[in-house]
Amino acid sequence: MRFVFALLFLAALRPSLAVEIEGVQVPSQAQAGGQTLPLNGAGLRTVVLFIIPIKAYVAAFYAPAPLRSEADVLNSSGPLVFTFTFLKSVGQGQVKSAWTAQFADSAAYTYPGFEKDRDAFIALFGPLQTGGIESVQLVGTDTLVYDSGQLKGTIRGRDFQRAFLSLWFGSKPVTPELKAALLGK
Image (cartoon, rainbow, N blue to C red; front, side):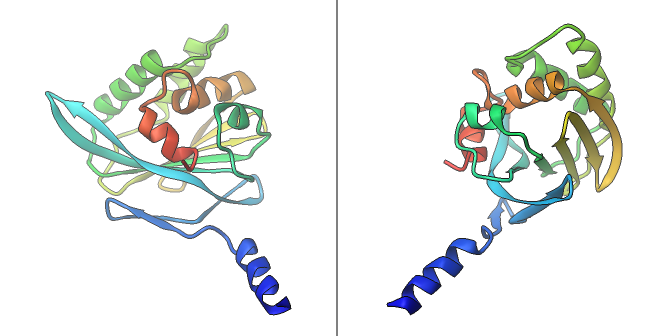
């Protein structure tokens, strides 16, 4: 019987397994702020263009402990990591338009100076290649943007982090299906 309990204990310590979505291998862990973070959830972002669904990217969300609700995410001290693996190449103008529209449609939290921070964040993104990986890390009160592992810039302040998190977990998320997937549901 002790052997069975030992196996169950070891299984509980094992990190979450990587998943595959649309041919993208989503790692089971990410690094941020000197910590190894397990995968909280991952999902596919589909955009409808002229009634045609287009598979845009695979999003993954990493956190130090399981976060299953908007309140859990907003109350987490982090660090938190988002990765976006793009399934289609997108030009810089399209990237800017997409982020601008997403903030306009989904940001459930704003504050004085929000527009300036939002525009600075959007300016950090260049054109995206098929298979390219963008990463956004929330470490302390800094939001760090990476393109293919290279730091592009930082937006400072917990207010911007709350606005960014509201895109995915707020009352008007990017998509309800992606929100549920990132929360591991």
